[in-house]
Amino acid sequence: MINVVHLQKSSDSAGRAALRLHNALLEANVNSVILTLRSGINDSEKIIQIGRKSKIIAWVSNKLQSWITRNNYKQFGMYSYPLLGTNISKNVHIKNADVIYLHWVQGGFLSLSNIEQLARLGKPIIFFMHDMWDLTGGCHYSFTCDKFKINCNHCQMFPENKFIDFPRLQFDRKLKLYSKFNNLHFVSPSEWLYNCAKDAFVTKNKPVFYIPNIINTDTFKPTDKKLARNILNIDPNEIVIAFGATSVDNPYKGWTYLKKALEILKKNYSSDNISILVFGSGYNKSVADGIPFKVRFMGFLADEYSTCLVYNAADVFIAPSLAETFGYVILESLACGTPVVGFEVGGIPDLIKHKVNGYLARYKDSEDLANGIRECLDKKIKGSMLPIFEKDRIIKSHIDLINRIKH
Image 1: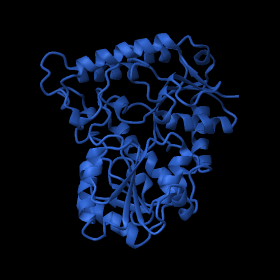
Image 2 (image 1 turned 45 degrees about the vertical axis):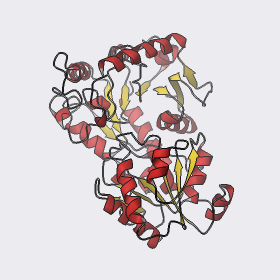
Image 3 (image 1 turned 45 degrees about the horizontal axis):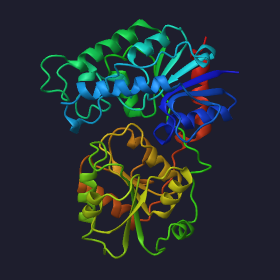
Image 4 (image 1 turned 135 degrees about the vertical axis):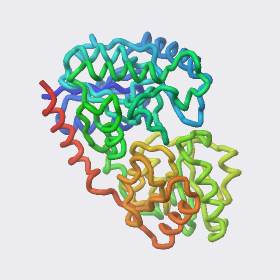
């Protein structure tokens, strides 16, 4: 039996990609284990926390990182420079592993030194890229910057830093690490990130593969819309538009463009006949005040069944992300039969077939975002998941890759 270990900072909702892959491998009779800094709500004998000491190290590392990045430009999103981490190369599960998957291991879980300690074991390591961090000097999305194709000096996130060029230092460390070992492999869940990795200076000579993320279609599937609305106490005759919003200040999520699109939409629809469902956070006054329709905040939905109900209750789901590697919420909505409107950026075009299962709006174009909402509502477009995202096909790709690279 193949032994696989996944390394993921947290196995709760933020780590669902790793968790879903882990569960699918178990179903395929692969001996899969997750080593995590925090296990969240998914405790099991196959999901193992690495200890209290590691959490303290992570806390200290995050404090140091916050200090050195205190003056960076927040409009460019998250930047990670992991100074400290935990050496897990002697962990019994690591010793028994045939293949090691590195998922999202920033946030004080693993430093680049810790990753090198794993690489020295000689075991095949798969970097499953959930954003651009593995390719850059530390940013998780580069937006319009393409310095990762050459080097990451004079980073746009640190324009006033005249003393230590942290992005360049980290970029050089990654290049040295990746060049030193032949047992490192990179997997992207989207064609966009795959192409980024092929163009990136640090990975252009490394093996890169495209394998989409997995979704559980036993849970995310169409149900009776009236029943879903009845459970959520929503008028069955209303037009229901849903979107997720954890923070209006998040530079990735495009709230400004969605707000303007809804204002444009108000010219065509009565505010009495439309309800907006917002999930991912509790009541947010900025969001509520910015929406010209009735708003219902669904809160943080911790379980997949509640999330599935919201998708099924909606007539259309809006994903106005400005940077997106894959777009799990998009795939979930489509699997539930609800069309999605999103910008044509990142991995989103992998998921949405324009005017077939949703609408791809021009990037940062609120007018076209509103057009997409009208198109889906007026033409009653149905959401559907494209065949490339079938679980059996995806898990076969992983097993084929594992068999190809394991010793």
